[in-house]
Image 1 (cartoon, rainbow, N blue to C red):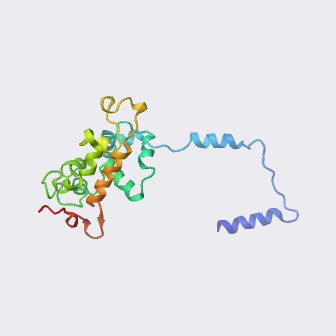
Image 2 (image 1 turned 45 degrees about the vertical axis):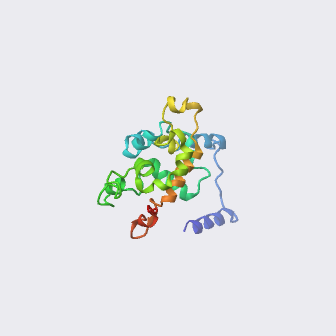
Image 3 (image 1 turned 90 degrees about the vertical axis):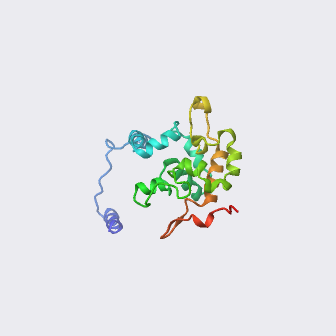
Length: 205
């Protein structure tokens, strides 16, 4: 309907004898001013509301440099599947029992193998089921192995990461974390069945 109306108005305006009102110079605005006004009125994220939420609190505990431009470097260059993994790990909204139990998608928040709460740190560092998969991640993380902030590209403090203004996340360490999670397939979605778990157990014999 919009196209039809526009077409009709255009034809009416170009018809012989049509009176077309000239644009008022009093209301004309330079393009540069219009763009500047648009930028100043742009909707910006409500960081205070985010920080007050449970997800925001979890994310800020991982990364005290938020909000910051470094998050772009974390996600740039990642495939969609890798970015999805990192997002889950950094927000806590992941397909692990702690979160699934909270939203009613799992009966218990406990890890079925260790009988401890299956949290992000548990998945990455302590669950005994995934120990055979941690070799490369452990080597890449070095002395920072077990540091959740470092593993997920977050800023901890000046003692461990130096001056915040000069700090950059260790992208190799973050990628090693993602590759570990992908190898376990713990966060893989299986239609109608939740997560894939039993098929990826390493042979303990």
